[in-house]
Length: 298
Ligand SMILES: NC(=O)c1ccc[n+]([C@@H]2O[C@H](COP(=O)([O-])OP(=O)(O)OC[C@H]3O[C@@H](n4cnc5c(N)ncnc54)[C@H](O)[C@@H]3O)[C@@H](O)[C@H]2O)c1
Image (tube, rainbow, N blue to C red; front, side, top):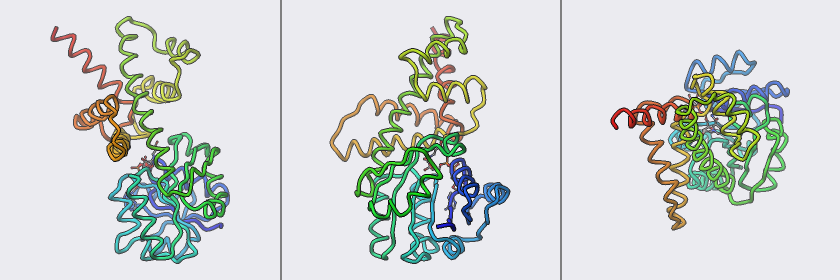
């Protein structure tokens, strides 16, 4: 398959589609945002004016979209994929959405004799740029094997979780629950270092070879906190969305996860305070403000 469609050319979609272009695929892209579309064109992609045009020109279509609403619109909307693709054009959603939405889309696709995989990814923008993403795929194994060469361009670690369409999403939500914990942990732990006037770079080199080490500490500290630049990356509101899906999954399975619940409440508060569009690492700045405020009132 050398002609690929790509819908959603944002922080993840742009580098993922660029990786495909660099690997020799002809990629036809679509995004509501003109700036995203322009960057994609600059990377060597062909811009389509509609989802129908993407469908017309591609053998397989990938999506990377920010919300349940966007995924519903792109797949199930009147002008969407289901009404425009043919049975021989597989659809692959790499967005992180609710497991329920994976199930609904798979059902509609089945009713229309269309092939669909839910394949969320992990590894962030850096992983997308370096083509080292982890891909967690749920859905028919035979279809997974057919489209594997495309996944192998996007990432290094490709897993077929099982035939259940939402199985990859379940793994991804567990992953992002851990990301939520680590991001909050780094944000609070570093405040102690600030109070004790420790050099944060030196602290990082020590903890990075100790049990306090984590990939999220490394990512959040080196790419954002140390640079005092919170341009995403992975926006805080997207992490909040994933924590909500994880909590819904816990509720549906009669699981009480009190620490995770407080974590979600924390991210919701920080988003309400206007940090939603910044990288999730910005939680560090908010925790810093809050902990210092507390001290001022004592
Ligand atoms: N950013 C990360 O580090 C990261 C990592 C892994 C997974 N994800 C997941 O990947 C998905 C995309 O994340 P992102 O960070 O690239 O988000 P983003 O907001 O940067 O990009 C989403 C793009 O989709 C476009 N879009 C929205 N609605 C559309 C529609 N109806 N039709 C066409 N285009 C539309 C937007 O204009 C935007 O360019 C999300 O589900 C996210 O949870 C993100």
